[in-house]
Length: 320
Image 1 (cartoon, rainbow, N blue to C red):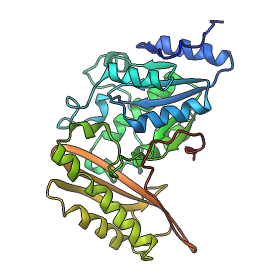
Image 2: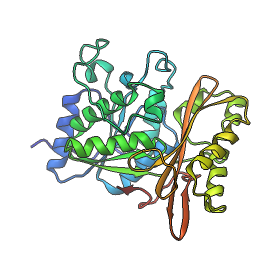
Image 3: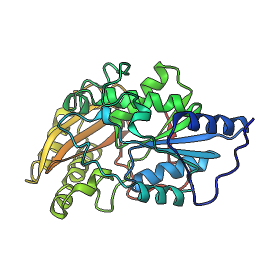
Image 4: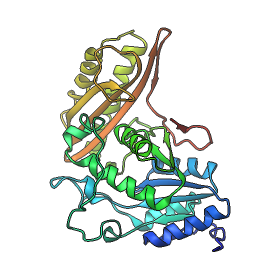
């Protein structure tokens, strides 16, 4: 049995090869160490850090993957412009006491690249609407890379942010359907102080665009007030209120504002149960997404717009 010593404080082990990561984690589990996994594309912000903290609070070893996945970008999308900052990300990982950073080259994940892989993973139904209709093939790329990462990391608990609500639903479904030994945990959407959802793409906004982008949160908040305080239960009216607020900002182009069931992502006519209100918009050439969830029952409505600061204590993430 290989011995896996605790990683030196403040210095994560950087691994680039699949076989090396598998061997390292298998040896750790053989010593009864549990593994928390945070899949990312890098350019870390406080939302990423909150996932690392959640994993660190519940597991002996935290692994963060850092891989900008070309399969989930369309030919006209921002793969080349997606923010990359390896040294900065490693410093953040060190500050968050991450044990391993898996940073594979693209050829390690997709042998033969740029030729497309012959095997991919697709999730029917959940990917038909929202970002799935706006970005054809995107979720096939997401599902494929997540399946590969889960296969490499092995038995573990994986942490995902709720800002990417459709992605979280897709990941939960693929893990269940493919019997992968990975428990999926959804963690709170994290916002800047002015309400803008944290995103690596925020780095690409100009100061004027950055200010304009806050209209997305204002639109969601207007919808939240309509339901929680105004008693609205018509999904169409809720959608229109959210969309109308976004159209007041000339630098923002609304792509969609949709009201769907939180579990199936099916469109709703009447608000009841667990509801997801999802928004996508372009600010210049930067595409941003945001959402809120609302639980509605006979006693009223409870809105979840995320948190304005990164959660640090245990218990703020919930497996579902």
